[in-house]
Image 1 (cartoon, rainbow, N blue to C red):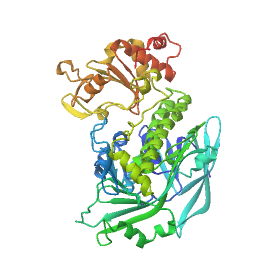
Image 2 (cartoon, one colour; image 1 turned 180 degrees about the vertical axis):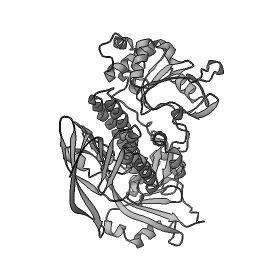
Image 3 (cartoon, rainbow, N blue to C red; image 1 turned 45 degrees about the vertical axis):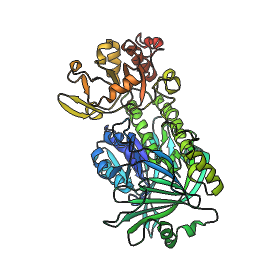
Image 4 (cartoon, rainbow, N blue to C red; image 1 turned 45 degrees about the horizontal axis):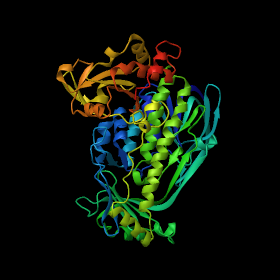
Length: 546
């Protein structure tokens, strides 16, 4: 069977990454078809952490309130040695740049159920479960995917013999670590060298049971490195590293599982939800785009879990892709804008993987002498703190003024509450998603000429002023900065105005309002909107813009 519909995007894979992309594109009105090998959602827990940036993306999907109900703010992430002395503390409960705590704990099946309902509620999104991609072909103007249907028989996925062929302008592989899409394009993984086996156990304490266990922590005990975290409201997770000489089979026997849990919980106190051995690895695809085919999530990268960034990184991938595809479909930009997808996402993910590996090296020590040297280094304060979370270092940012040059291009933008017409709201709920020109204490339109305003209108950009000065308010144009977060951010970075991308990363900043037209001109040049106009030439004088 051949479906002659030319979809805008076909997504292979329907985990949280594929679900999120289907929603992000579906809510923009695009024709999206999703295909997933498994006939139903996977019912067991996996990821348990998402950070403030991803919570902001969930709000952008209009499901922030639902996600809040199935998650809980994180406590401080603590690392202990064998004697329970604190080696490291990372305050994931602290206020983040996105207006809320740094992190949240959740139950993945509950999250996937919310994403599933949202995706299936969109009339232009078709979700097809029980279909496996087996062939992918690219042509000049579209792609073709051949799929075979299957059902579960005695716990095994079994083909029924039915096949279909679908076409799309672009295909996105969000089909996991063993991605068919990645393999079909011959995209190789780079192995960064980390590999450890861990037994992962999820359980649900009985009603009224309170366990004496650190809220979220790593017990860096060489006798048995152990992770203890919430698994979302009402759930707990333990992870135990496989020691030298232990077999995978022995580690997964129920008696062994309960013996490992015995210091904290007994069978009378909780119900096992699942247990399985996972191999934590560090892999990253060499490139993430091949023509009209792109990969995201575990199809593009895998990392140790010690920063809780596996699923987060995958959602960042499709958040980055969604606005680029939107600009292509609207005719604002050419498909060349997808070239920056790998340039932006790969270095950021590589930095996250590297940091996760270094954290893993601290945790995964089973030699007592080596652990003693580690403890001495941390307890004496001779270990430098973790680097800040990485931003973007390449792609669509003001390269001469990114973080490596002392600027904020490529950094995640601040977010907070604003007040307009007497109503206090989240900034993201007031201003439509897209490119934003934000100025401090003034309407940025008053600083821009007709050509600049026309270029911004063409890309669907919004312009807004934010202020702490009640006397400077202009209805719908200059809004009140309720908490002063914007005022502090701008003054800290000596910025009079910034341009924020649709994915909330900063394209660039201007020290003075006089520099703003040149900053806008530079963006239009990079997007290819005004390449031959006199206005675009203003970009050549923007060297002082951050």
